[in-house]
Length: 427
Image 1 (cartoon, rainbow, N blue to C red):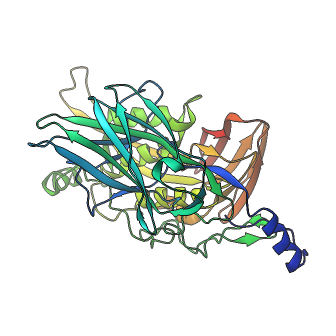
Image 2: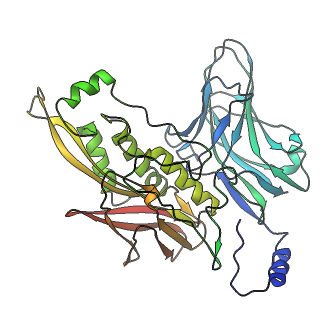
Image 3: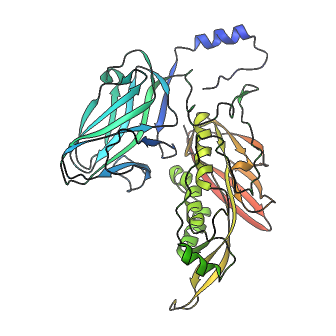
């Protein structure tokens, strides 16, 4: 992590201070609430199906959605293996334990290993009882690892899976108890020049992006994310476009879900984190034309990469300001439909938690999805105190206690006022 030092301290003093803390370690979460934009490496993957990184099959006895889901079935008995890549890796670990929650729909032999510069560690095996959540704490010595070592990825597998048996593996709350404080994280996901030291605080370099521009270069991730799958075929689009000039058309149920989520008075921090992403999915997948706005999936994953790079102390505010229409029944029998104009003005956070009592909230036009050149006016309130947050501005929040905290975001645009409650867990 970036060192935090006051101005004016002599270089030699800074070096001595760093040497004094070189032996410290702390717990680090690699995957804790679905906000971690990880992936499974295709090389060597033998799981039958692609993993779902933010799966929701409900509350699973100590495993709260979202979580990773790996499933499938094969016509022969065998081992299913894959290597998980997390944005917080590589990390230097030194003893302690590796933590992970694992659950399978069938009795299964589960294995986990660490990918090191020298190769794969020893595999640690665990017998999973069907439909039981196992909270694993595996000493690093069980992997045959001693002393400081750099961990680049985590391997997982199900072994001796019977033929024609559909099996699902759930994984959640992955992390280490002892990561060296001086080790860098997420270097593979975030540009090293995007976040740096500034006046003893963790700095952030604002972009020159125009919020209304469709194009966003992959500034914080190595590659562009794919777009949300389109709900309409080209033939269907052509038919709808003849009836409306709108860019997005949703059904009434989707509209009501969006309105309910934006106006919610209370929700869990995990659900709050997904609200912006889910609402943008509902709107943008129902597009009638391509390249209407910037890809919200790309912006969301880049925002969470920034939060992870700063150890969840610097968090971008995600904003959307979009017109859309929805289809509603025009009579009691719903024999005919009418198209109603609507507007989405919403904010979100790319993480469900922050580290420590202080958080810096930033508003970069890069993370605003809109077609308008005039941006909404935004103020942020916590514990009854409100402060304006302008584009390319930052706001320091100090929380009064740990646990779930409410942040109120007030947005104004063309006479429309929206007050949205965002929830975050302070750890």
